[in-house]
Amino acid sequence: MIVFSKEGGEPVSRQIYLDFNASTPIAPEAVEAMRPFLMDHYGNPSSLHWAGAPAKDAVEKARGQVAGLLGCDPTEIVFTSGGSESNNHAIKGIFFANRDRGEHIVTTAVEHPAILNPCRFLEKMGAKVTVLPVDRHGIVNPGDVRKAITPRTVLITVMHANNEVGTIEPVPGIAAIAREAGIPFHTDAAQSVGKISTDVEELGVDLLSVAGHKVYAPKGIGALYIREGTKIEPFVHGAGHEGGRRAGTENVLLAVALGAACEVARKWGGMPQLRVLRDRFWEGLKKTFGERVTLNGHPTERLPNTLNVNFVGRVGAEVLAKLPGVAASTGSACHAGSVTLSPVLAAMGVPPEEGMGAIRFSLGRTTAWEDLEKVLDRLGSNS
Image (cartoon, rainbow, N blue to C red):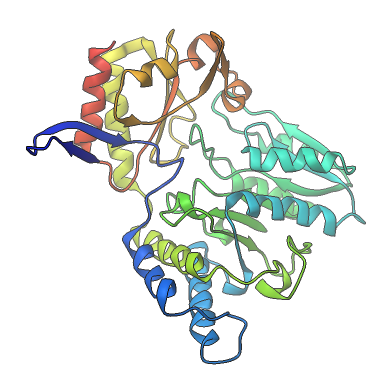
């Protein structure tokens, strides 16, 4: 929350940030971790001399911190430029490394574009992609995943939690099906890391994507967990960086920031207090709007910080326009007077008259009840 003042110091407006699923501020611990690498430690981590040693040690410490949050061995962590690269590496890397086995990929209709678009790209190269439907809450049926598997299936990729509505997919159950069939299983955990448990053994996944700017690290850094023994093609070819899985001198500055952010997330232990605030906010919306507001996503199997609601009969962008200073996201797009639902809401079967009024409010560590109360007051005055 930021309060702006006139010259005399009187507060004139309040900016309220409720878009933490889009991006988070950088944790103070991550900022502090970067400072030495802005000025002092400039060596190449691959250099075997005094200047390279601090950089090498810092990268490996950060790798261990990321691994600590995911419950894996540090050698199974590859630093990337972000969640999109991690997803691309997982999908393309598995596909290209397993062409002798097959060309079939299974995914869902509510995945992030960083999943669906790489799959579409691979279709041009001979891939066969099955896109499974979801129910009204946005959940894929594990039974549908089982039925979709063929002898030529080389990858199953299902997100851990949806970025728009927060619905948590039944990843452990799908992972068990994949393991039984001997098929690598990837999950996009960009939205779930730091919010709920992402222990890779509990989830049973072979690959898992992390996006730094969703977990209070800077933009431009991410990680990909690759279970030991998983056959995967390098994303970038060159020298033997990152265990030969991603060539290019490591971004030491951002790696140490991600490591510090993951360390904080591990100590934070999820976001139970945000669930309380979110549910209190939802109760306030229902009290104000009654049947004129509906919920998107699963009522309980949902990220603790995410509330996606429909203001029935209204347009989300127009509702937000009447909330000056409030940062949130809409679930529909307006084009020349018409409203188009997001692919996620459309896949969930949300009626257009409801979904056109969709707004996602996503909370974070700095969210206070007074912020949400202010939003409720503004919404109520414009109802």
